[in-house]
Length: 385
Image (cartoon, rainbow, N blue to C red):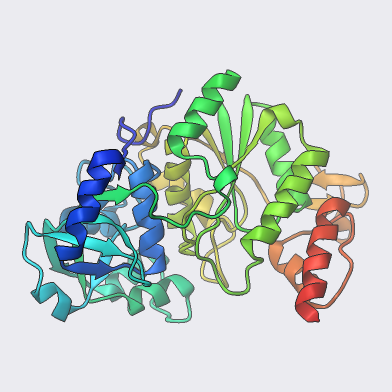
């Protein structure tokens, strides 16, 4: 089994007497209200999805990540994992002080020892991580909305405090690793998605399955853009597809409770690191991974791995070209395998699927399996009524 990133799978969830102690002292502590993305990050820290982090980043790791795509120890890392507060709130919190971490509704999620408070350059983070300062970029917008002071330090979280979507499908890194071991899988490929799996995605995952023991279909179900297809709809699509079109004994469907950052190339590395912590040895990177709009080139998310210390990353990246339905061969293909010209190639994308659904158009079989199309069309019809 592949080692977690940094060598140790972090567990910052507290239970039993330790949890009762946290609950007992939390009401007397100063509090930090976390934004939804920060709550997702906190949960992933606690379950080990962001190993080796044990809390929100301090200034050293923050700057190293923004400028060099590593932690201070040189371990590859591509996006900051931070908690922000206002300058006014920061003035009232002392270094070394324990604070209660709460969501926007005021529910206590855990506690943190504040080891650092530091200002940061939002424009610099935007340029380095998102390659733009354009406030229309959803990731940049989140940076701009954040507080002006970052607080860093180790956390402890209450195991029963988080609202977890799809609890039956929300396997922790420890649980996926145990499941892979139980099945005897030594090589596992992860597929990241925030869209229903259309025919191009199915093709990529099945090509990958030819060279590994198992496939983890790992849809991201945290905060996404408002025009993305809702997670419950997507989950019904994944289940229908696995039921009819995959060998069930070689596939695991579990959710990743992370928020999308839409950081394109940087987020491809981030997604890879998290899947390593979940026990995956291989990771699929296709066209415009984690992209949005026209901020990134088609294969920028593949090229960025040339800047990473792959020995320390430890995951094999499977880079796929843009795939399409080839009318001549009647199958999915890429430019590497298709003899047809552009006129015989039907290109697929989540954007195109969403557009057709909005227009009430039936999805052709070249786009989507009938069982998946049925789920999507029912959802789209309900949204138009």
